[in-house]
Length: 386
Image 1: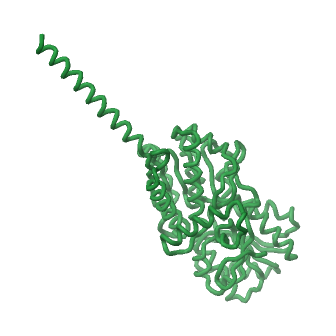
Image 2: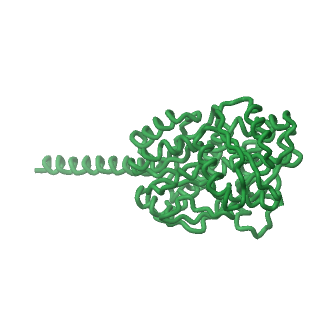
Image 3: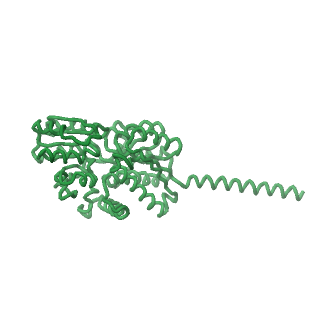
């Protein structure tokens, strides 16, 4: 009888130990919040994805060193797409199907983001794009969001400035990317509202290294200003080619110009470029009571101290994406995808680097036109235009 009791007791202890082991393993798996990121860390889009990847690295380190998210560590799995749509598609599937991530931050470019929208929507995985094209969130898809300001607002801010300067006849040039094509559509859509006449519009290869022939066409059209809507390398090539041609018209660039490295690449030709941008690049001159001041200055100082390079608006887009995600996880106290998605859609008054976000069921960007300032380049530095 005693032997039987010992056997039963042993069985109970063994069962409890197994249960404890399983429970412990379950908790260990739940201890980490897995987030994916698809960024152009290398390649032609490195000026975009490089700062984004560094920003995420910095934030993850800071968050985990201060207790994580409600006691849980966060892990960001970064995939370098090199700006390739094919790579972005492959990585999106991998992150959703194999890594089982809660959300994906990025991609860095509009074309990549547009091409993985349906994958994320079908996989019911939150996408927080770091790219600017309005087509990313228009039409609205349940799980798709973006943190950069809208193309349409950038076009409007450019046209408002042209009105102040007395400019009416312009020429536009855009790269044949998702970002460039989206910008061209917005410029053409809103130009009539501001009395702007687009006399000539040209599309060029995104990889072009000389655009003098395109600019010669614009110059011969009798224009008062040039608008270039592109990513690298054209953002620096256009001003240099204009200078070589002796073109004196003002050059307006899109909100994709917000990295001082573009100015450095263009050299003296960058002087006087005008563009809409978030306030990160001019954080130091904002009044102390500005609602974004504290967030902008902390992020800028932390980034520049850690990486010994100037912060850019692109790193700020990744900052906003991760911090929005963390904020709503804390609010709902859950990593259930549907609950987190709904919480982002209803997030109000979230202060980020891009502006103050107010999402809704009809707006998955959440930023108003006042999230933009008009900046210019003077003595190789960014500064407020007015």
